[in-house]
Image 1 (cartoon, one colour):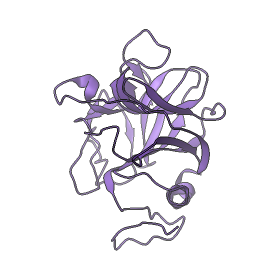
Image 2 (cartoon, rainbow, N blue to C red; image 1 turned 135 degrees about the horizontal axis):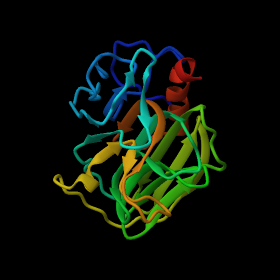
Image 3 (cartoon, one colour; image 1 turned 30 degrees about the vertical axis):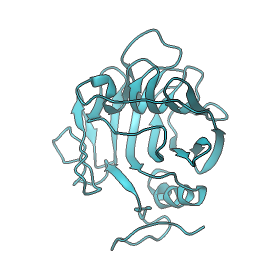
Length: 245
């Protein structure tokens, strides 16, 4: 299957910083001073659509190292809601390094409980990708991840007219899939719970509390309005492994 890189003057040599561009919705890169401006705690979108994120309690940023550090207490980024339905396709991609494991926390998420989607971590050390309305389309990594290790995590979702398929990949390897119909979900532009967040979620799996934060580092977040094939995921993974490997 061909790689859909779209139109760009940037070189797409594997391992050389290229990435798939077709259908990109949002692109955040902490190693690019256009995206993470020195002295500014906001995270700017490089896609050309100005879908920028506002930083909250981001005390230290290390753009010279190419990532943001989250303390697990109150650090996160927030954007307006991503308008998405159960009948649409999406890919969410993130490069991350866990500060600790076996804790709940949002990585790239929107919504809460029965009106949510995103990549998060669970209290058994695994990561999950879920799309949830009245039911839950959810996939977990096949085993726990380790603290202090960079991972490339990608969740894809697509409705093809008869089935709803969510897939989760870790370092380019398929972890599993789900065909559960997640049911309908909707969003409000004024509610914080409904906004797209990085490093935070409001009520996560197995938790009775609110405001679960991520501790660790995040370098890149990309969102696409289509579901990637595994070859495209491997393409993006190979493009950045020299930086995070």
